[in-house]
Image (tube, rainbow, N blue to C red; front, side, top):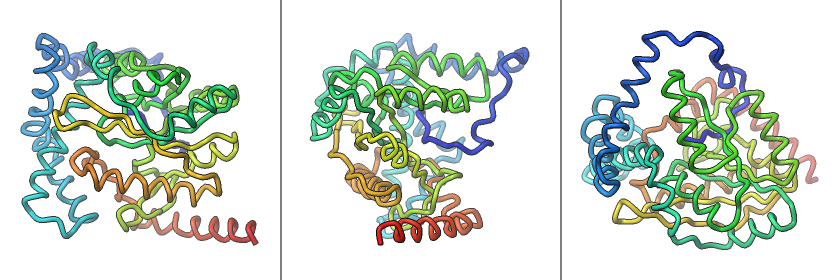
Length: 329
């Protein structure tokens, strides 16, 4: 998946690509990619539902996703009926599996291209493009953001860059990077080199897509579903620094499980990084509540929001709030 912007040193450390690939690493990469190769013998209309079923019925129990989904729902939505929780356990994992195989399916781009795209954000992005201004597109692991990437291109926005995080297995990572690049380019590795490339891209009027719904170790404990969740404010900071509209966009999956609609929301009004990021969290929460089975409840979104890391970040949040208040006084 496209990652939220994370600038801490641990996240940006990468294995030296010059190190020789061992037989074990190559074998592991082959085994990891084998299910993708095998399912390509199936028609797309069968392949995607099958991947969803396998993720829901096989991968989710083995990987502990079912427990994590239940724990997250109990934390964020404690009043949900048990029947609804169990439905979401199945449907969320199904959507995750569909996401995985869609990215690696050669037919995906052409399948998504006719998707309905709507919302005030389209005109905002096109206007910025025509004026040579950069834009920051904020989204999340909801529906399938790769579908949104295609919708962006279909509306004449052809220079949107995205970050990706290298996977530890280098042979499998090569397939992943190739699949990411096949949807749209440019893509930037989440590293110091990638940061330099991204900043240059923004300075020359390029657009940047960021997923802002992960537990960001360098983030601040901002509310999401009424609970503190470490949230990166870097998207808003860049929007303000480069005079770039900050526009939420969602690739929402339709009821048939195969098709999408791309929602371009109105710009988040420029103010300060905290206000803008809180507004993004509020809009994302509204979108998740309307599509509970499409958000990745498998992520540890609230992992560090209230522990010692969250407490440390809460002090930084208070200092930043005081600084912003003083600047407005």
